[in-house]
Length: 450
Ligand code: PMP
Image (cartoon, rainbow, N blue to C red; front, side, top):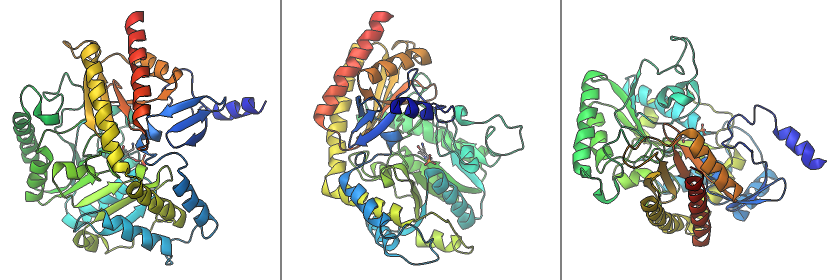
């Protein structure tokens, strides 16, 4: 009876709107990389609430920090001074390179990106913003303008805001997107693409120059980029592309913003921040998701110079920097350092990629395996020669089969054709093997049915 009640409660059509599954999963409990449904079935979670559970569901250290703070002080706003916010900001700043030292706390990634846009415009005095095709930057009215994927747009009559197509002042960048048929670069790892990454970099930089010259004539406020596109399907840039792009944007007076909402906090394995893999230092960094291991939180970090231009008005955010959020986020940073989370991300991620590449060579329907650390995309195609995306129904069947065998993975990409692996970063090599066996079985089941 109790189960039935829980099911009824969960079957509210609003909460069910974004499920991947025909037979939904009713999640009841979580611990580290594991989730349990209301019937007690256990799942290996390789999607982490969309790359959000950074150190593990209900991680003991993080939970303890939350409980301790819940018993001490829930909320004040930043009208008052309270230790957790200061302790946290100091700690977070120590993970960022100079001159990125001024921190504003928000409740989500969308809010962080909204704030970053505002800062960039106030600092530069310019309005235009350059972003990429296939990007995702949020669900607020402003950030929907930045987000390119049409699936997230609402059919508003033109002139009524940003969510219809794009804000008149937001220019889509030139990056090809995740549909590998359209992209001359399938993978940028180790320069193994047929054309060579250097050629691809020149190609895309040429396009960027053209966009800047024609669409954003000398008055750019900001250039937004995810160091690896997340929702877009783990799409990476050719070698040196971001470095060159930053140079061009800065020459035109714009600031460069790294959206680290998915790539931050050690997820890419080799680096703590995704931008470090591109050998750049952004002017503004936005973050959320993994920052709070599931606790709603976000942040914008910038330079004292940009912060000074922004400080002309009063910035207020009722819940931003909430004491419980700060205590949780502080315990997340401690955990990443104490448990070698970033190193584990590199080790397990590299292993997963290597093994998935072997599967790519076996299955005609795996078009590409890409990513870095525990931010992995597996692009599904009808066949390797056409590179047409595998139809949504087929992707859904495989996803459902994987779930029925006890593993939860995500999907994304322009056509929903890319499986996404972004597990809690505490997963083990044994978990990776478990997933690989399940995925292999789901693919062979699909090929048999076909
Ligand atoms: N930026 C990126 C790169 C994201 O992936 C997301 C969420 N998927 C956001 C921003 C928006 O974050 P939120 O949902 O917390 O508003």
